[in-house]
Length: 482
Ligand SMILES: NC(=O)c1ccc[n+]([C@@H]2O[C@H](COP(=O)([O-])OP(=O)(O)OC[C@H]3O[C@@H](n4cnc5c(N)ncnc54)[C@H](O)[C@@H]3O)[C@@H](O)[C@H]2O)c1
Image (tube, rainbow, N blue to C red; front, side, top):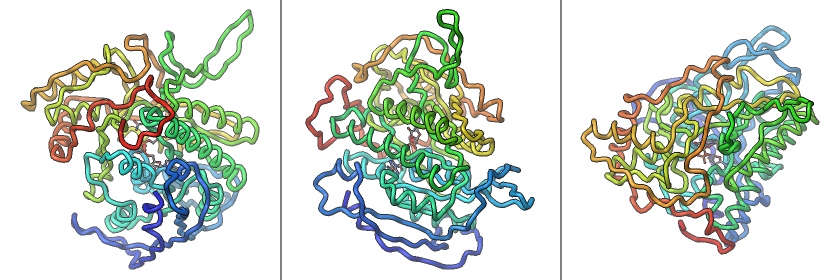
């Protein structure tokens, strides 16, 4: 990792800020960023102990404009009305903006008129190097992505490269950018990754819990009115034998009634980190008056958003391997390469799902309708629920229409989870605020399958089968995919 970090130090390029459109394949540098370097400690580097004298990389585009700390009122998407009645773009910091959900969201927000800054330490790209994985789609470096966006649209995205577990770095980014809202995607987000070995379990919990804690302290210290939009997961709730509510449940016990946080039953060290995040956020909303929205997101599928489709350098990552790939995306790749669809165990595992176009919409809705100071708001962010068997049946049907021979195989379940269970999760709050869902349709499945067929020569079939067992996790560090 030290090599990855130290290979991209000082970078200063500049040219015209004038907005112009270039034909595809001709994206080029059209904005300026400046880079500064610092050192610090982080759990990320502790995981990779072979590093020699690692240096923290901090990328700061120091163009902060001082803004009032008074709570501003929202007028329309992407702008705020201040006390003088004039409106200016709302400043949104997207932590984890180089990742799957974060990249699509950053472009969407920028397109809608928000001032966007991406904060990312690029650790997700490092996981690929570490485990020998790759995105189905070729993805450009974050620097080229941002240059291309500027070149196509004239819109700048600021970039801060560093680890949010390093509070010095995060403080600098906060004070420089002065966000009105922070969207926090920046975590280790794979349950299997967190179950590879002890070091990955420890890394996941340190990275996620401490990173979020630092964001909370940064808001308290530097931007009290800043709205935190945090990505949680529906997996925090587990699969209880009663309906899942949106964050809270009203219980009558021994004649007394209270509305309490909905019980959490996490099923991996990753999911447990999310539960702890939620508790820390809820506590700081109460104790310090932080305003926060916890988006308990379902499993995301799809890869295209209108913005990522504008140029191949803007394409999003698409994971299909057994560690980072999510169910429907994986099934589409499996169908494309003639691999049987890998249903874990009985396949009755039911979860909430959503299209990546709805992820970006939901986040924008949460920003445009902020939580009140001191409020800890929880939205269940998914649009439909499916069992694994239902998804396999849908992909089989869509594949047959395209002439693919799609088979399904039941593989031993590497996870510890109920394979047949009741599942009914509420998800009305985002709809009430205006979400217009893109439901899973035949045409979307057709397009996803066509997309995976287009890139099927890039598929490494060795990465398809699940390789991480919940029961076999041990202390010995695994140096390659288990
Ligand atoms: N993808 C899904 O299906 C899904 C489902 C539910 C919830 N979520 C949540 O949404 C968020 C984003 O998921 P994703 O699929 O885009 O993940 P991703 O791994 O593609 O992106 C996460 C990004 O955060 C960055 N990051 C991680 N730790 C960091 C740190 N300490 N400092 C700075 N940057 C850091 C990574 O480099 C990466 O670019 C995660 O919090 C995840 O738990 C995702």
